[in-house]
Amino acid sequence: MNKNKISIVILAAGKGSRMKSPKAKVLHTVCGKEMLYYIIKTSRKISDDITVVVAHQKESVTKLMSSYFDDINFVTQDTDNFPGTGGAMKNISVKNEKVLVLNGDMPLVTAVSLEGFLESKSDIVMSIFDLQNPDGYGRVIIKEGHVEKIVEQKDASAAELNVTTVNAGIYAFSKQILERYIPQLSNNNAQKEYYLTDVISMARFDGLNITPLLVDEERFKGINSKKDLSDAEVIMQDRIKTSLMESGVIMQLPSTIYIEEGVTFEGECIVENGCRITGNSKIINSHIKAHSIIEESIVKNSDIGPLAHIRPASLLEDTHVGNFVEVKKSTLKGVKAGHLSYIGDATVDEGTNIGAGVITCNYDGIKKYETIIGKNVFIGSDSQLVAPVTIEDNVMIAAGTTVTSSRVESGTLAISRTKLRTIENFYHKFFKK
Image (cartoon, rainbow, N blue to C red; front, side, top):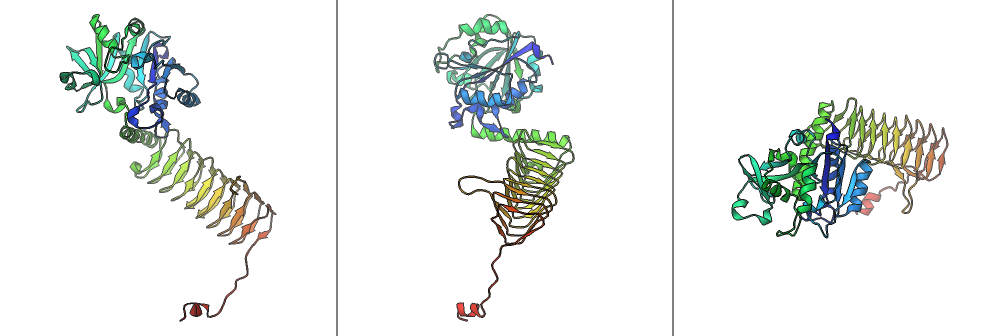
């Protein structure tokens, strides 16, 4: 597809009051990424000239999207003087002769689903779909196969409200059409806003043909509520997991698994039921067992879980992490941690075994400290390693030991226990039996 043939304008200025949230509508996330992220990602597949119109929380929107993409133009809408979708198109400058106008709250749109807009030779193409319940959408009045006008719900008559053909909110215009009609827009309506949809009526009045394009509701449905957001996430999850399985990832009961946009897999990987993998995690030739969580981490040639929690900034390589083990911001290479341990802010080298109940005490209430554990270290059950501490190679830590020394030298045994004391007949005296 020739990216030089079309420019894209994405409308992302609205508050989204129906979301009932202080957060800008387009910044609500689906599978770990903001809604606007997805529409920009899709747009970049078909165009090299992308403009995002911002207003509400524009600094946050611009900063977040710029962290993902470095080739986007941001334009601030003058919402005080020119509110509405038509106002958003004022003073927009594009370089190509065809302009596709998208909405930032449509994360499910795909490049393939936009092909109909690009292939048409009409001066105006607009998306429509037919809904059993069209509430909340502008109604599209079609006669003899051409769009006559679009009526916003708040301005519709009783007869027009019965129309089930609705505006899906995406348009393709010739550049000349926008230059001609955008300056003519008026805010003489119930909302006192400038509607982009009025361009359709004006163009039709001048005898131009407007081609309606029937689109798939699943891909073009806007997100207007938290319920819509949840529905979109279900669809996006299915897309993500289907793509991963088609590329070779084994998933057991995939409907119970949650995997965010940005997670990547390499080699032969297995993900069991109930797992959650988030952020930009990378899983390489590994087995993630049931009900484990991996956040923003790298797991290579390892098996994790069941019921393990790998928190952000961790790297696990050639490692076994078992039941109820939590790892946070740590590097483990060639390590065994079978169960019931916490490893935080640590570096652990190959051949080391971490027993049940072992804890790295990395936080003193003010500052966090690092634990460094060398090769072939055996750490007995129920031990506490009080950071900052370095345990050199070939060390044994006896079960129940609290290590408070800053360094344990190679070849030694560290043991810290009180001598066992027994009192005869204490049980019977205590319970008076």
